[in-house]
Length: 144
Image 1 (cartoon, one colour):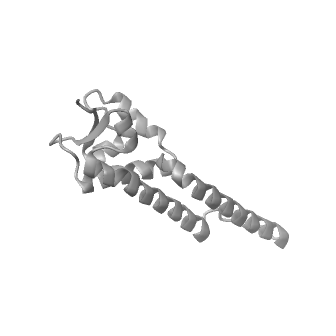
Image 2 (cartoon, helix red, strand yellow):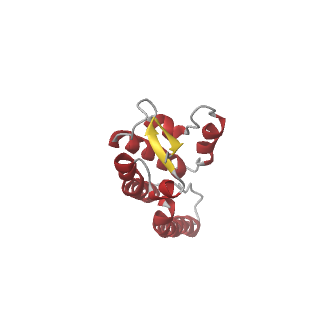
Image 3 (cartoon, helix red, strand yellow):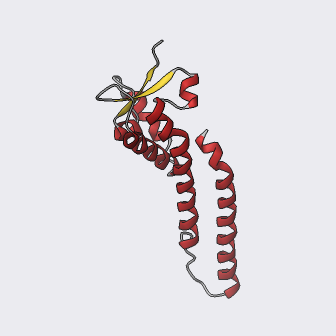
């Protein structure tokens, strides 16, 4: 759900970056002089930073705060899941949920989200992914 909220911004930013890069390529071709056109520049990095900031902001509101307050998001509540601190087995602190969310959002942003699933599938004890390990949390079924 977090990603759906940021998808509109992502589409706009991708279109803006595409137009910017195409203008750079066209200008280089029009000059008639062979030259290197860098595809990563200040505009591209600024838009990427804006997208990451939006992901983190939405993650803070949708995931970090509800996990610290109630131990679950709306989606986790629907499926009867809760996030617990790996040591105390209690609701994680705001800092732990922030670390968890920041790690998850950053990995997804970097297009390695599939690698988030690998440790979850191979960890037999708590099924923790990277963001759970960083935040020292795990997901459990709610009792009752």
